[in-house]
Length: 111
Length: 113
Image 1 (cartoon, rainbow over the protein chains, first blue to last red):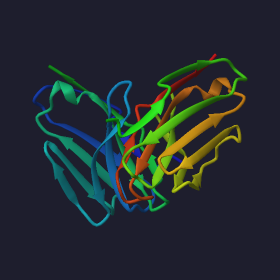
Image 2 (cartoon, rainbow over the protein chains, first blue to last red):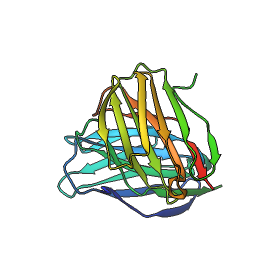
Image 3 (tube, helix red, strand yellow):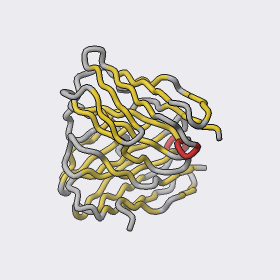
């Protein structure tokens, strides 16, 4: 069954602006991961946040996790045209590595 | 040096045919997966193998059969292809079966006509 719901489904911003994507999930998790998918390409891992962590940073990315609300957010600061892609959250519920993906957010960054 | 490579990248075939997609990883990972991405970009796991042993087998038609000759390879064979099998199939691997990031291949776009 689908685990993650992502919001918004699509987001269009100007270069330099920040982009925030949200993910909600339903069951308990070991960790939550964010992936990027460029058009016609495979998924690239961005960041993993464990269930006992609340916030994590990687370069221009900031991820938060609220296990009480079963939600996470991905913030991309100072966006660039190259950030244009689909972004997926995926939950790992300690089921042998099985990732359950959200529907994704399509981000378009206009130069 | 591609970490997870799958072939072919595109596959167009007629209904009823049998086809295979191959996947290889050179990362030394123990666990490999097959995911299916539909036309709405929804990704769902199909199978996972850990050291050649089947670990996850989601509700997938019997026409789909994974085969892992060694821990670096996981192939997907599909019998009697149907129109609804059209999708992008992704192979992935991870160091262990869980609590770690997954590395994905470029995908195989399967079109059944």
